[in-house]
Structures are given as structure tokens and as C-alpha cells.
Amino acid sequence: MNTFKPGLYIVATPIGNLDDITLRSLDILKKSDIILCEDTRRTLKLLNHFKIKKKLVPYHKFNEKKELTLVIKYLKEGKILSLVSDAGTPTLSDPGLLLVKECIEKKINIYPVPGASSITASYSISGFEDQFMYYGFLPKKEKELNNVLSKIQKNDFAIIFFIPAVKINFYLESFKKYFSDRKIFIAREMTKIHETFYRYKIKDIEFFKTKLKGELTVVISKKYNINKNVLNIDIKKEALKYLKKYSLKDVVELISKKEKISKKEVYNICLDLKKMKKTINILLLLFFLNSCGFKNMGPFGKGVTVSFDPRTVGMQIDDTIMQKNLIARLSLTEKKYFLSIQVEVLDGRIFVTGKVDEPEEKIKITKLAWETKGVRSVKNAVEIKGQSNFKSSANDILITSQLRTAMIIKKNIKSSNYTLETINKKIYIFGIALNENEKIEVVNEANKIYGVKKVIPTIYLVSDLSRNKN
Image (cartoon, rainbow, N blue to C red; front, side, top):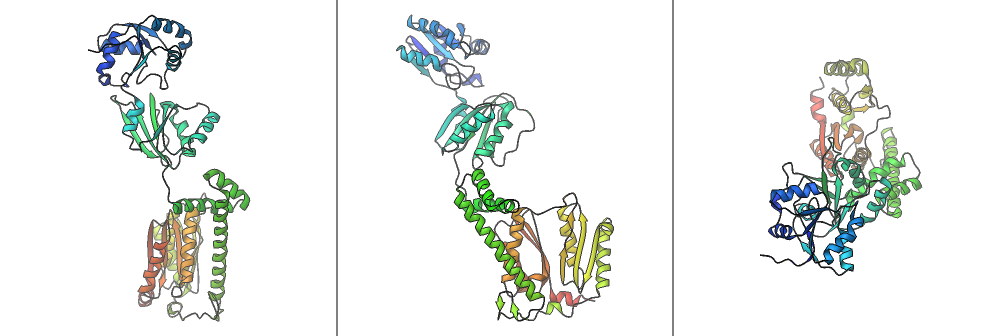
């Protein structure tokens, strides 16, 4: 049997399941002259469960200063006092710190009685590294919250917070801003019937659509090293988008502040993008000059020969027949295309204009155009309804540009015989290849582009088209 000396005992109580209380905690509660409790109703429920009858004195954040003198008086008289909170270990985001400091000042004995704690309980199953910081409750106002998070985000270890469940979306919004490169673990109703855990990457977690109840223990992981190439791709996407609207200086300032990286690094990324754009424009201009009949000048300057390409000879079908054929097939696919899509054919080159509802429909129309017998090239200028200024995402534009450039550079690929469309990092390739090797090379070049999720080729061989011409 334990012999307890006079003094103040900091007693941990269950955070949900009453069976989690320790034998020593029960023993000291039975031996206490007075039990200081945050809420007498909650503590009485615990004591009744274990058939303990003791004097309870309310001691909470609203009266701890007022009761401090009387509590110290009891302790100086040699009484045994226990301090408990509603759940878990007292003084950690709970009343009691003022009393502990006063006991230290007055040289009164203080004894810990360890047990349940939502801090250690949540962290033990978080799966995060050993080192962590306990912060407790975060500020309720946005300005104060931003001040706190901007400071602690610099620390490279896990952080534990207590958050009211009804405010979780408010705090998640700030977490996405300051901890986007970390993971999050949320523990709700630990050790109770409706115990629930949530594990996400902070950048991927969605706001809760239904209101949660109670108090949450939230654990943010330490920083994880992100592949610098992946990070640069994301920044390039942002820079590409902003450079269309703002000056270089403004873009550098904006991204540097948002991504928390040096202005010099952002500036260099922006310069690379500008150089890449300039190079692509030059290549496209040279290619255009070559395709317009400047036979003595290849895509890379005078002296580079352009080999004879049989794809432009012996495959022509009357333009009117091709036009009627494609319009009929479009109308059979979707009746609305008869009115919404316009088709023109000039020397085997198909030009498609009009409006559709979804990006995928534009892909479908491009495919049908390329399947038309006698086709030499396809220009699809169809717009998306409700998005008169519709543009692919910056990443999709980058993917398409990179593949187009790679095809121009390859001497054995005639890039004008291909249509490229990129939607959600899936690249669709339509065109005519001289032979099987060229077809394979085009697909290989597409697969080399960083960020491409899937390559979907529809490439016909000259030989097949010649045989099926009639």
C-alpha cells in the first residue's frame, strides 16, 4: 500500500474510457483530504464509478486566482490535495499552472501521478518522428493565428495542437497556408465509442462538410524534403500563368512571398521560362518558313536539307468529299455538332471551328478529323462553351510545348502532320507517320516529358492510308 506524504498531487485521469485510470491515481484520490477539480460534475461521475467519496472544490480558470490563497493554506496545514482536470493530465492547457508555481515559491511538495494524456496518446499512433512540440490551443482570431503559425512553421519537428471541433475548417485553411509540405493526423473522441482518426497530406485534405463535435487533438508532422525538381515544376506553372498578366518584377515578388523562397531563385526560373518561350517561337518561325516553300532553309538554318516526304503526295481526296464525309460522321456522333461545328478542307488540310461543352469533346472531334480519309493535317480551333477564354492549365501548355519542340528538333518527324492536345496531364497525339519507327519515336518523346500521366496516340501510317484511300 502506498504511503502518501502531505502536498499537492497532480493526478492524471482518463481522457474517455474510465478503465484507463491507474491504480495509483485511484489510491491517491481515496487518500486525498480535498480534490481540486475543473468541473465537479465530471469528477463526481469518475469518483462514483469507482465508489470514492471525497470533498470536491471547484478549481478552474475563472476562480484559480481567487482560490489560490485558501488552497495554499490547506497545503501548509499538512493536508493532501489532489488536482484533476476534466480529462487527461492537469496543467497542460488546463488550470493548475498558477498553483504549481505558487507551491514552488512556497516550497510546498508537489508530486506527479502520471496517466492518460491525449498528447502522448495521439502522438503514439501518429507515425511521425520522435521529436515534437506541444503547443496547445491556438488563437481564435485570424491575425493572432497568422502571427503564431508564421513563427512555429520554421521549426523542423512535429507540433501538437488542441482544436475545438466546430472550428476545424477555420484552422485547416491556415494550416494549408503555413504547413502545405507536411502531413496531418487528427484524433477525435480518443478511447471512446466513436473514436475516429484522420490522416492526410495537408495540401490534399478537404474541408469537413459536416460539423464535428468535441475537442480534437491535431498533430502536424515535421517538414518533409520535397524533390526540388517537383517544386520547380510547380513554381514554373505559377510563373507561366502570372507572366501573362503581370510584369517580371511583380511575378518575382508574388511567388517569392507565396512560396517562401528567395527572389533570386524565382527570378532565374522566370528568365528560363522567357528563354524557353523565345526558343520555341524561333523554332516555330523557322519551321513555318520551311513549310511555306523556303526549301533551301531547313528548320535550323541555311544548309540543312529537308528530305522528300511522301505523306504529301498521292493521298489527296477531293476536299468537298472529305468535308461532307467528316460533317456526316460528326452529326452521327452528336446531332448538335451539325449546327455547332464548322468544317473546312483545303488541299487535304482540315480546319475545324465552333463550340462544345467539354474539353473531352474537342479531343473526340480531333480524332474524328484525323480518321477522315485523305487527311494531311488537322487544325482544331474549337472553343469551350462558357469559357470563351478557355486555356489549358499552365502545366498542360508546358507539356504540349515541350513535345512540339522535341518533334521539331527530330529531323525524321514532320511535326506539322501531328495535332497535340493535353488535358489534365494526359497528352493526345493525332497524326500520320511515315513508318513504324517514326510512330514509336513520337510516342517515346511524349513519354519523356516530365509530368505526363498518360500518352494516348492515334497515329496512322502512310502505307495504311494509301491502301484505304479508295
